[in-house]
Amino acid sequence: MLDLDDTLFLERDYVKSGFAAVGDWAKKRFQLVDFAAHAYNYFDQGRRGDIFDAVLKDCCSGPIDTSDIQAMVDIYRRHSPNISLLPDAIDFLAFCQGRFDLALITDGPPESQRRKVDALGLGPLFAVMVFTGEWQDCSKPNPRAFHFVEQRLAAPGTEFCYIADNPAKDFQAPLTLGWTAIRIRRQQGLYSIGEAPLESAPHLEIATLDSLKPLLDWSFAVSK
Image (cartoon, rainbow, N blue to C red; front, side, top):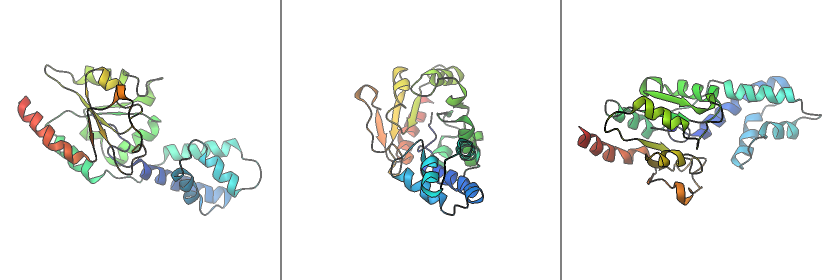
């Protein structure tokens, strides 16, 4: 089972893509020519939640219209992202086909997450996809998505593993259910610096998905 953002692709690439889409709109609406760069600079500094407000405050005179902010948020979430699977993710997904049933469990605005999945061409590769934003109050660490995957894919002898990147929320539920938890700590990942609480520390930490293939190949051979 896999997470999406910073597991299969870099979330930073999605952010850049979204800011570029909003920048096209801002150029027409406010004659701003450097919106995307200005916004990403704030993002790179760690700012979250009010980047659009901050850029407009910096670049435009007069009060900020909340309808403009909402329009920017909608464009960001609904744009068709310019993103790509990471090379090790491409290899890993190909490796898993025919060996393991794959499930995707991802948080975030469901419209955005579905557009990411479409842009990456992931639909045919996964037996189950769970967009927790489509269920009320079910974002990780809520275990509902993990229970759902178990119900859909469980069979005698089935073992479950979740590969994800965010130590603050990704591993609590699968560990409680007895899954194997694996953290992928990508150098450019948004949560690469944080550490998991001791009570929800993953079993294994990896830098790329390539290192998992020998372990899973052995597991597949033993299970046959």
